[in-house]
Length: 204
Image (tube, rainbow, N blue to C red; front, side, top):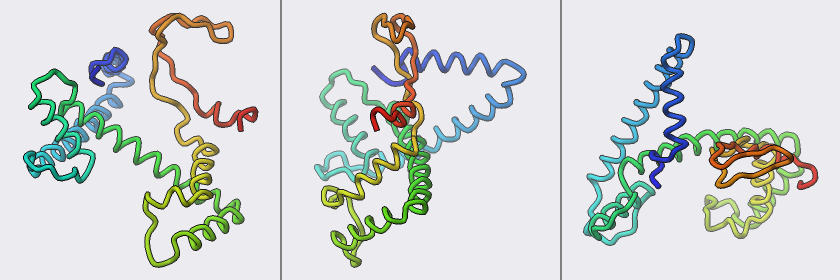
């Protein structure tokens, strides 16, 4: 199912539009809509520029996610079968990567610096692993990850303890369910609280 056609997305759009008519929320809604429209123009411009540079007859590997997606659209179109790979969908995915990736990366780095200040012994172990595995004559790459066990574990612990994303995305129940005495009927919109799990002493 295409992201923009999802019932929950439609529901949220209709509710935001309703709040935009209320005097107290009108200015906030208009500002949010303006920012959203400007971001959409930015994503659309990038996609069109990228599309113009691609040689679809070439079998070369894509240089980035956007090119890979556009190539997939072209391939699906040539096959002549129905599909959900569209430029509108690509813009939605790019928007999610841009906003979610930007905020979570910044927050992770902030917590990383804080924890390194509070736990200098961890910082020392990280530096020792870098010196042993990487050295000082090159940058770390993703290919090094399997060899950087302590650093990988530290990054995961930073994200767990920092609760980088305190809430999950909107989900909905696929059937009637009872959780701790509370009845949730089918199609109930739910937002899991990941931070509760991440700070559960029984688990961690």
